[in-house]
Image 1 (cartoon, chains in turn brown, red):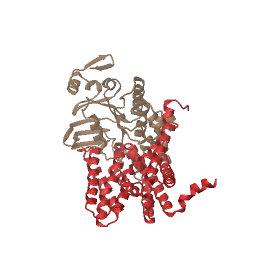
Image 2 (cartoon, rainbow over the protein chains, first blue to last red):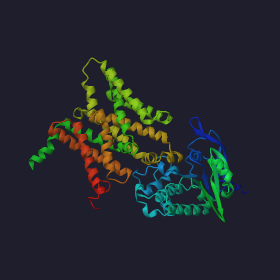
Image 3 (cartoon, chains in turn yellow, cyan):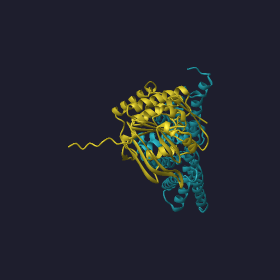
Image 4 (cartoon, rainbow over the protein chains, first blue to last red):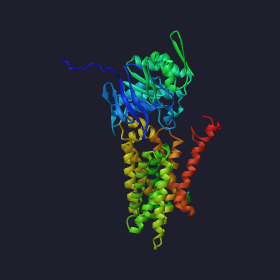
Length: 257
Length: 284
């Protein structure tokens, strides 16, 4: 008899999570979930705990309370199921590593201590660079890249992890409109291929326009679900504690302060 | 021609100069390898603090009649450990913790020295360095510890690279980031102690920082930065000892100033990052 289990219902299932730094709580009673293959946005004002939430999903920050389930399982660092791209400011762009070196770091977690990357690891890293159209620049130093190219390298590293859930912290920050558009197209393609993307961003309109799912956060989850349902004036005002205008014109949604 | 050969050969006809050469070359090469991380992680202050802290241990060992290197190594390792622990707590800034700890340890050294009646010339060799008086035992110890550190860096190269470049992601990938960072600090502590006799407490930081910084201006990867840094350090040692011999000046100061001069050359003439290139005076 086959004992195959049904695929897990949620790519990411966060249940009543509280965490913070020292004795200061940054998140309280955070509960939401995201379906597999979803392009999901994490939005909220500065200091609302977006980065903290991503770090507790990654397992870097231990939840004080509650559960984080990834594809139905508790996750520990090193299992490889979660890819992560940090905020660009958190990366040392003057470090003497090439684009390929960074992509190859995506394999390090699976390799464990001491073992060197194999030829297969190198091929996976290179394929990840091809996937984000950065293979031509593989030998460039990371300090020689444009803002959009820098984000792509970090995404390639997450792809090289062969993770099904990708967490991205402010990937659009500092990008021009064209670079942002290219990145969103890449996200959509990845989600069509079955990757689940959870993207922390300030850009509400972009989430409203292009994303499948939104989580609105301000220390706790104010709403989650389809962007059209989440981005009501009532919810946004509760999250941002000021008046935001939501304009709907046909299929398009614009949010402005 | 013969004069040139004499000029080049003369210093090495003396055994103490050969010992000094081996010791200085090994120490400066190892210091450049460890110094590569010191530079990339902005740890120059730690690199200055640990040799100073080791003086506390050296002085206590001197008072107790114990091995001075062992005393210095223990003090540097304990200080490195405390810096790491306090830095992790996050209640006191990292550089503040370093500032408090190393002067505390250094002051301990001065206090202990002030209680000693005997003349403390041996101790001052540690402060200013005295590479011309290293014994063969010192040379063997330097080679053994230096080889150990280089071996560890080679074994854990991948992990050290990842942790230095992106500690958050390295931790999320399951690497023991805290252990690696402590290991790096411990290697730094041992490197500073073997460098003490060559250049002295005050100048150790120059061997950690200057050759690696010179290499950074000329290379594109971490391992080539380490290799070239080691070569620059070794070259500075050789030239520095020639200068010291022929001009009859301090060997430690000559070695450090040669490294400084090599850095200045790289700073001006580096093909990619040099001041000339960036000012547009030199075409590609």
